[in-house]
Image (tube, rainbow, N blue to C red):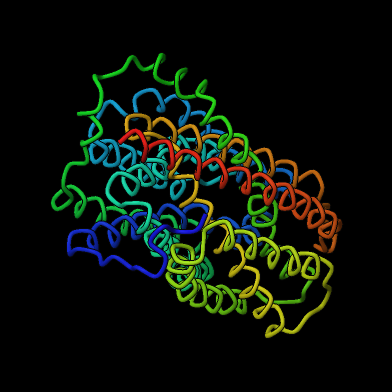
Length: 417
């Protein structure tokens, strides 16, 4: 959707900059907790003596529990100050991450991931609701761009440090690092973030079940929910086996992975704000479509590789994540325009739940497609790539549908006001 303020770039206030910084750092901790499992897969599978299907279940356990908790929390999401909700669920997330750091076998790790998912899965929707409450649509692409820097930062700082700690000590160490960082962020939010409760003046406290059912049954929202189901599928399918594919198929070493993740992360941090600004200026659907097409081209090539030099793998990762970043920023900004203020928390919770549940199904499904040979080589990764590309083609069509719908919503709301 083309911004009505084409060429205009409203400046951020000092407090808005603080909110962007603190929410981005919080997202860094949450994203790192999830993505760190991918490079740790090459360590966890032999250490815990598990196969790809079991490792896929560890990844999807977080997603399934996050999806379930998001649905349960949706009815309450608009009844309270969003700052208080954020603190509550972030504290639970850190507790679950500490349990991951204390786990010593497969079953305890699986249980810890479920606990972490119950709390962590709701955080993203609360952050999205806060961003939508505090920032107008013409600023939202840039805010999403800065928030997306958290993903790049998790690769620049988090993944290399996490891999170093895992190699230097054991696989528990990265989780302790996340707990320590998250504790500092939680204190800053508690002390300096203002209440986010303007949505409470737009309504009386709704009945939790009734509010959830009303949100799910609203036709305007259902179009976005349908698009969301497939939107996250691609990333969840490829990510869990990224490190195992790199070391066993591409011939890379565990010492080379931090360099690849670090360089890719630097590029993502650079691309994030630029793509966000581009999304606000030339149009969110245009950026989404371009990013999707770029990702598809790289995926079909990358998933067919065998032994490959490190510099080629790095370059392909940089380009692929540029496309993925463009998809995530533009889609998040576009979808955030759909809900009314009084339904924003519930809408974001349901959206996050659908993302997590569909992502969990995708991770489990990916574990069934990929087969690991006795020597470690992963077979049928190319088939997985074709499945991801098919979902991306469908999402282009669905997001164009969402773009037209948002245009109609904005026109109606402008007329009503």
